[in-house]
Amino acid sequence: MIIDVHVHLYWPEVNADPAGWAAARGERHWSELATRVRQNGKPVQHFPSVDQLLKEMDQAGVERSVLLGWYWETAQSCEEQNAFYAECVRQHPDRLAASVTVYPPAGAGHVEREFHRAAEAGFRGVGELSPHAQRHSIEHPAFERALALAGLAGWPVNLHVTDPETRPYPGQVNTPLGDFGVIARRFPQTDFILAHWGGFRSEGLDNVYFDTAASPISHGPEVWRRGVDALGAGRVLFGSDFPLRLYPRELEGPGMGRMVEEARLALGNEGGGAEAAGTPLLPLERVLGGNAERWFGRRP
Image 1 (tube, rainbow, N blue to C red):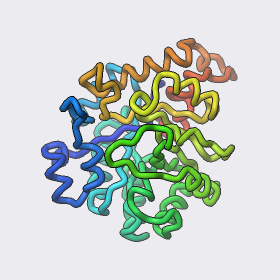
Image 2 (cartoon, rainbow, N blue to C red; image 1 turned 180 degrees about the vertical axis):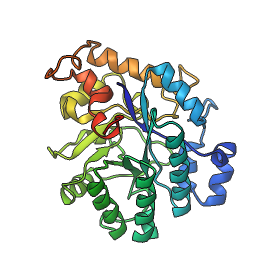
Image 3 (cartoon, helix red, strand yellow; image 1 turned 120 degrees about the vertical axis):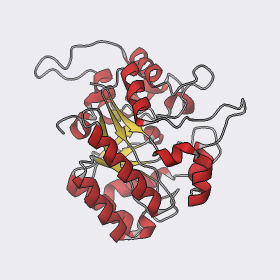
Image 4 (cartoon, rainbow, N blue to C red; image 1 turned 30 degrees about the vertical axis):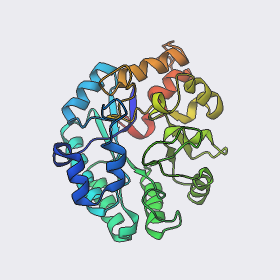
């Protein structure tokens, strides 16, 4: 089973006019990241529907995708995205899982209400969150409440990480890597997935994992072997960052399938490890889905 743990979708109102919606809602940072165009005039990403996501998954051989929220600058945006994701999961429970997003500066009441609604809707995780982009302390009480609730629910928390080794881009927010170690140590009962390879800094913590989102843009094909060697195959989860255009010089679409093939080429395309009882999964099988199945499989 291939599971993409890092996918974003937006509701029809956003897709109809992304820049206009962001301006009206005060979502300046998201707009800077998501609506810009490259030097060649092509958009950084598209704004697909859920049906277009499912088509992309079918073409890539991805069985399940995890819908991640965004680190919005308002509670209203979080609530609307959570409601949209609840409907997506209701319609496609066999293909989609979802993570709840929150805006901690709105307070613990907002966090608790959204977690309650998410639990009722069958959500499986939290994030993508970014205290640095949402401009609050990693010790903010409502943020800590969200991390504690995630641990109680058994939901992993996906945190946005900016790798300091990658070249700067518009809208980039510095995320000191040491902060993530502090967070993970403070909440040992909560599992964390650090996005974008987490700066390749594991600190040997048992509750920290890493996703591969946006690898083709931020790194290159060599990142797969480097990441697995540095972090361990049991700690890496495949994530595409759909609908980001991963291969802007080569492909018009997001490139989810191309990224799957890149992982296969880098880590080896052997199969069969999952069929024999007691046989350990091969590194490729772990990365593409085996590690994520405990949280996001059909029967977590």
